[in-house]
Image (cartoon, rainbow over all chains, first blue to last red; front, side):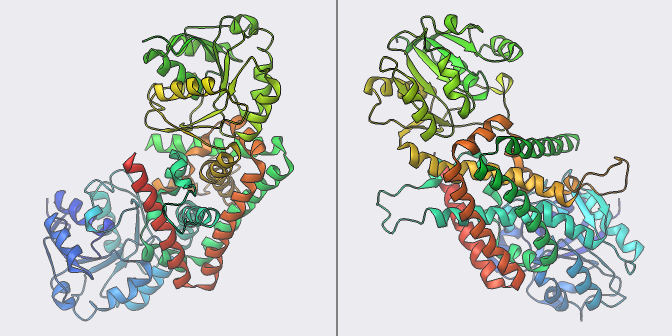
Length: 300
Length: 300
């Protein structure tokens, strides 16, 4: 089977970029993977682990002969990241990304890229709380969903090839309007991360760390069970990535926060009033919807 | 090795009660385990799975010859549950519980039980989102923490025997003031559950289910990744149990909600204002504290 791409340039060889390099090479989808990033330490790990075949810090060298560029960087960095390659990319090279926010990324890419460089925005919905080339693994994408957000300007052939790339590493691929994507992801991903951060910060506020580590003050984390550990797992996620998602998806995120706050307030009122019936109704509704998620995930 | 208890009566043979029966029998801690509960279907499952040796619906028969009663019922049911056995329990029988809220349970038990029936309140911090005898398993308690909340009235020998029971099934056991327990657990367990329920309910509010299942409306749960699934896992927890915890630990829970809301509001303001620096600081602080939890759990 011929290669889907001859030379894939991965900008940002972290969990997503690195895992794609590894998986695409393992499946024979690409002939060569070139890594580009900020720190040599990370790129060396990527090279050692076989996520990439080579790396460079020279944008012109990186762009040379590349027929696909994957921008796997924090969403606010997407524009600056692609700009450095623009003078050197060959016509027809496909530019794609892996950001968790799509509308502003699509707008940025479409405004920056000439017609000769087709772009296809993508969001592979896969990840862990770990970052960097050391966290990448080949099966990250298997069975997971990848959302492509084409617009009127998207070239059909480029769209098909980016679809083939993500399907090639085992993802189910779906197309969606960028704004709809952002509104849904605000609810099912961005808000949960904000909540996880806030649970940790609320706890720090209630139980400030003892000034003297040897003091008698109790450490609440010692009493945390699996519910707390699972709920806050993603609070260990990378700072820049999540700062950028919050900034990039502001409106949808604020709307998701508002829905959540309304639901929490309803339970808070029931707790305040000792209203067992209202609490039971809230818990039962949540429980049924969560059980529906379990069934959905079992079907996958 | 002699048995710790000859006849252990488990009232409420669910995840906790059933797992304790199974583990205590497997470790030779008890000679006989008697189950008592509301529904015969659940008790039959418990019997079939070997969680208990026998069961009865007759309180007098259940109490006969019992030297330890474990009340593994929703916390508000603890008082009514123990009252039915009071006329029939032999002097010296130890009464213990496994509730997630301690101060009101301690108050209830100490007010209801005569001096001849020593009581020791306990909270084995272990569990899953699943309920009933079918969800019980022998290793549930291994390596986890059990908090005992003795008071001035607690008999030293009874305390030692209840400690031996939970240590016998593999738990680390610690003693703590009931109010301190409730304040900590509000933060690290009760609040996270309330949040998980509210995330599901907030989502239902933002994306109401389509009236016609075949309509084109998008189902946000299809786009939920592992962050959402893990964060909301405990939203599938049993209704009565969590209604009772909310009602039983009202003050501490409201205070935990307030700390969390303050932390979330701080991030919301930063999102609204597009303040990347404030967002980074919030995320970084949460991240470090969550990484500390990971290290604590790795040491266990």
